[in-house]
Length: 179
Image (tube, rainbow, N blue to C red; front, side, top):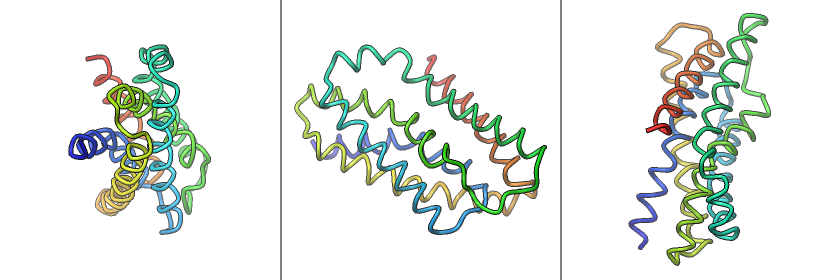
């Protein structure tokens, strides 16, 4: 039972990992990286807990749109970064509320559905939430630093690079959801 939970947690954290790589191209301090990674993990931990508690009805009601909300938010934030990079100087550090709260929340909708399913299968809601939160936090932190390394190799303004990467990620996630 724990192996299945770890595999599911890892799989569900991949969208946060990929997004963190894109966000990692923006400048950030270690403190900000920890905040972003923990927030990604927190939402990915809360979502299955809520899913288990709300049950099948809510999961079925939100199911058709859950796969599209995350990509839409990513795409909008990427577009925002592109436009703002053309209108301002390069940022010194990530300091956008959407990075800390909006994007992680929107990417956690799949975990809400997973939590609903796990609850129906008899998995512990607390164990599921803690497992998903821990895996996503680690994956997001790694993604942020991988993105930072990529930004050093690719000499382009960080917010412009991040905006392009987020838009590409939004398209990839939307295409994955449609199949």
